[in-house]
Length: 277
Image 1 (spheres, rainbow, N blue to C red):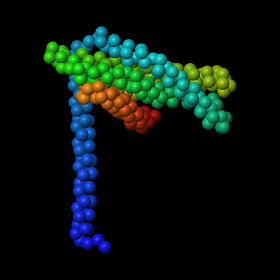
Image 2 (cartoon, one colour; image 1 turned 90 degrees about the vertical axis):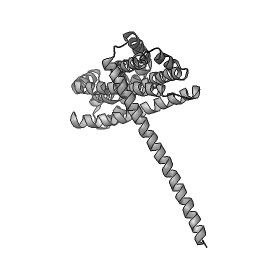
Image 3 (cartoon, rainbow, N blue to C red; image 1 turned 135 degrees about the horizontal axis):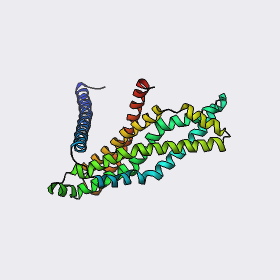
Image 4 (cartoon, rainbow, N blue to C red; image 1 turned 90 degrees about the horizontal axis):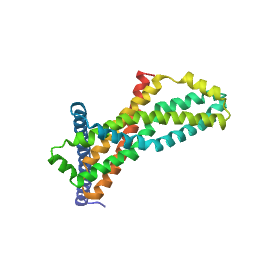
């Protein structure tokens, strides 16, 4: 039988546990809000630098090579693989209803609107976004960024803006290449493996394709390019704690950028479907 003192002691223990949980949740919420606020201020400062401060074109072109050209192999292989997979799955579903002629438009729409921009952005995040964080994070912990600031060098102009602009330029181009590879491999699989008529595939793509589909994919790619570069650079600038901190920041940048891309993809797809079907 529980006596009154025992009941009081248990109640106080439960109350303390609830308070501890509430304190942890509150601390996590405050930390998250501060992180979002800090990232927002960082992004605004980078945008202001891009708009009002003269750009370092040679550094931007170097980053276009690092972000765009060096990411071509992984983007091409990703687009080709997804295009082939879409062709196989489309055939399996459409063939039951005698609608094989719609494989081409289905592959094109899926690649142009979704898989092209999304997968290109995620692949570039893993390859180039992580490199941005690691490079800038290493400069931060080795006090190279402090040295640049001491020399009155605008760090945003010198380090951040070229990477952001390179990503804004590269991602739409990579998205187009990824889409083209997917549609082409979808054609090869459909014609030479699934025995779909080549003219039917090509004509169906021409009939089903439109500039609106490409525009939606390109618009997404531009947004994704800005997100992955800003997140990568921000996490690099916020790095602390030596080599372990660089690894932690790099991991967080890839995870946060990838999740942001997926969430933004859903939001933009929903809005575009309502505004521009």
